Image (cartoon, rainbow, N blue to C red; front, side, top):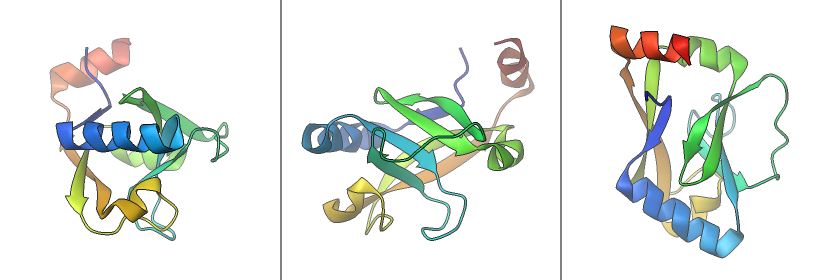
Length: 119
């Protein structure tokens, strides 16, 4: 099954570490305001998700959302959540870990796009 969002092993390790410290977490792909276009990690329930947010999938047992307008732009790509050294977004949980989440992407193949339409 084709997934809209996946995570690298490094990202999954960081997610697990954050869950151990903070309990369940969730993600929202930032739209470029305060923290650029980074995936933001919050304690589950700290960010109110609205009807304009699209559930992209689950990484590390954590839901990953994106605003509907941004989804229209990214709908043809798979998001690959990774981790790099540096300071995370000021509102994101990994900010104090010396690491930050980063979104990489790749365009879906025609076959994958077909699968997603049939899901």
